[in-house]
Length: 496
Image (cartoon, rainbow, N blue to C red; front, side, top):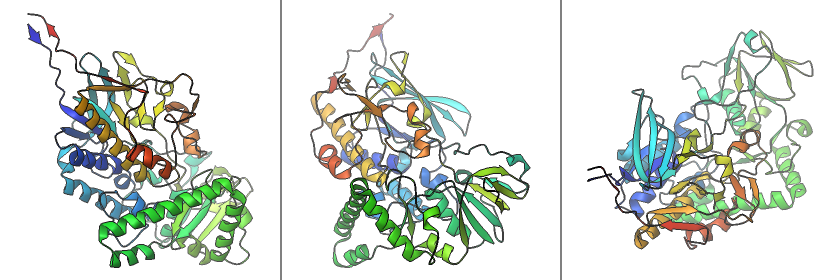
């Protein structure tokens, strides 16, 4: 009799070598050093978002004391850091922890199939460097691939675009050799990417026009945190980092809570600040007053008033209007106004992709992701031995990613200690469904129906509150009644 192998290639397979994936791997190597693991990364470099996006001025709109890892103090000068510095920080983390040795680049995961008989995953990946299809087996899969499509950003179809004589560029695919000096540039959009691009392009362009259909809430913070710098001089670096991190999380959650509970107060406060940053008599009602309340969509952040300073210097103009069509020399607007342009940048958003767009099968049956329900915002009903990271939409992504990784490590340790080989979630039929991302941004609304659901109450509710998640995910018990654990099966003998 011959025995079918029940030993997978690795204990844990991590998908993605970006901010979340590198953090997860470091947690795994530190907390459970006996576990074997591999990281599959679709691109050819570490960094994820921070390696993909290369447009001028690319930066975080979360401060680095909260976007940084809990275990590795951010020592850069800037609190609002440039994309290159963030990428270098991630690469340094991977190298210091030895994580980089476990990465298999150019491996895009296209399918995952779970076998209850074998009690492991068979993961299929396409190798873009060799055009081959490969498989790897793993006892547990941890998806850290983010939630947007790395291959293509969102660009609406504009009438007459084929008639435009200049260049049309999406920030997700910024040409390295683009020369925009002395050019007239129109940036279409009002989100974080658009307000980052406008003042940075204006340094060399003849003029930049920020064209928006509707405004966003925009605040400014110093790029360097004076309190953090003072604490560094007086406290050990890890303690100074932790105190600054707590301070910044507290401030972010305070602003979010005030925005939700007292929107009119926050509207007035934001407007008062903007009045001081903009030229006297500037039309705030048209260009800086959204139709929604603060934090119904993500609040945008600029460092050191750079956007407002560019407006004051007449380097950047804001136009609030709708596009009628492209022309040979620019854009015709619904109002009849024409914007001349040599370059049009479509900072119009992202395309979301649930769990990297991979197909899931469990015991030979396709999994319909929208029919699954998320548990604690990190595991799914009907999909055993699987976890994923989705960060906060109202705070730093890494705050949540760190806690999810810590929870998954505690779960794996619990399974080892008790001789369990599988864990899956049993759905509570009394819990109502809600959209996975309860967020009014256009990029979310376009794709949310393709995502799993969340529940109307805990532990099925996807919280967006660090201080409520912390005691549950970091310090709370690992096991509850929704979890079903299984022990190893006996080896199966076939043939003779």
